[in-house]
Image (cartoon, rainbow, N blue to C red):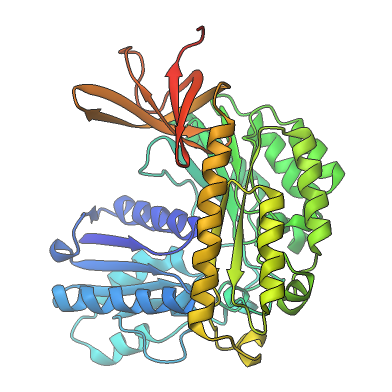
Length: 442
């Protein structure tokens, strides 16, 4: 079969799409780049916001319209929480994605049997009752330079705005042995940077009665694998940034000084309504502790604007806090009502206000990003080359510094190729990007 994949949403979704693609290839099927030429179109859906749900269903309908003969497969979060008919031939839940090949092959074998098809299309597991991590085994990213390792699934926090615990279920952790084996496999295949990710990464090991040291122990093992030159972390929980954990991070030889600590609001009253289990002051303490150990670190975050009952004073507090934290980037989301969450029953703010506040915060984020890039000028840095671009007779290398600034450099040596890590001096910045001169000296 010729199979087309579309991924919506987070890094974990992208990892799971890469895993599904490998499963199809291992079973003799072919990956294609266009939905029009495919026998099977697979959409890995996202449900983090109402807009993500809408886009997921829109893409499913569009593929069915543009390629009526194709089998349409919906898998992932939107599929899991849907209360109605999903516009797809096959619907696969969040913790049965590793069955996708068998499900599709069974469906194709039963084509013409409408009762079988309908049964397959609308049977999903009770994900919250699933307490087993479904391991895909080793997964190669098609990107070819850096790769994700998913080590955990699910979340137990139940923030009042968030549907993900219902879509992904409770925390389940991958075995340390399997994680390390995949990291070794990636290193042997030339990947120099590993991004350790999960739905709630700091909960790794929690289902086994362990605390944050379980994640630190895993990171230590991955850090020691020959060939891995960069170790990057996914989103982290502010309260998990204990002094002991930060000291452990500092000891890792290859850790990239880029930390994504989800904030959501700089107002304590909003944080309480969100059921976030920290205050703005506690968040700031964690950031200060990290910066004491990683002076050039980049700090990125997520913030929701227009959360139910958010006042102008509360939003002003968020702006003031974001300025003080000097974020390298803020991922801004106007609040999206998710049916089934506690916040859906709260007093809602007009969407125009949510969007206006988001626009204002994005403008602040853009300025803070530019200021952070500018602060790197004159400093030595390394980039992992992800692209080589030909422009006006020049070859330009594009990649990210360890602290996650997109950087460009002119290439003069034939030794510089995609996948290499090169060192140089940051000579300038343009908006949130940096310009680097490869090599040292004046």
